[in-house]
Image (cartoon, rainbow, N blue to C red; front, side):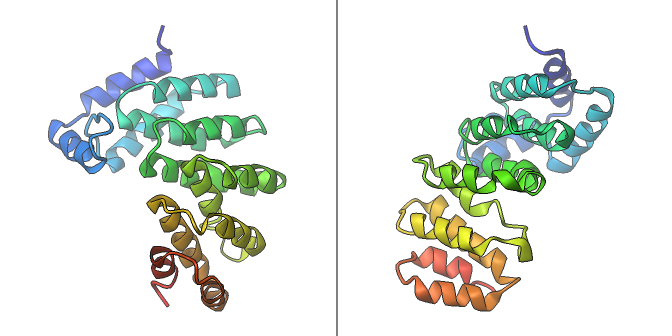
Length: 223
């Protein structure tokens, strides 16, 4: 039996769907997912109102609901689950990490994985910094490219708080990977830090000639 929370949001989403938008969104993500066709501003407006009237009692309920949402074909429900976890920071704990990992490795594509980073992962590690190295080193050593990508990108917004030793270590472990999403992530991570310390990034790129051209180009894009 479906969670009443999920039943309710599905009904609201269906009522606000747009077939034309859905077709375009589906094509944009290479026809991997179905869509209701709800634009992001409206979807977030719906969610904000929904959260206020539909509280989650504990982490177990949150986890169950997130996995149920991910079991649905519509991509907006996956986004809903990601933002639901981001909204409930008060329920985060060490047991949130297995849930995050589950989300990264199910229905995986750049849109959901990167959204999980911005809504949850980067903020989680600021709240629980003691977990950073243990968790992200495991991700970096993983054979799953999306977990590897998150080990490279979780510090995107950290600016001066960026652990450059960790960033260097993770890039050096993945710099020979041929996957586009890993190469892009390396460049993106370096470019983001270049706004804080452009000299460090220039020196890093110079010291790592084996970086792919894509990674180098992304890293130095605004220098």
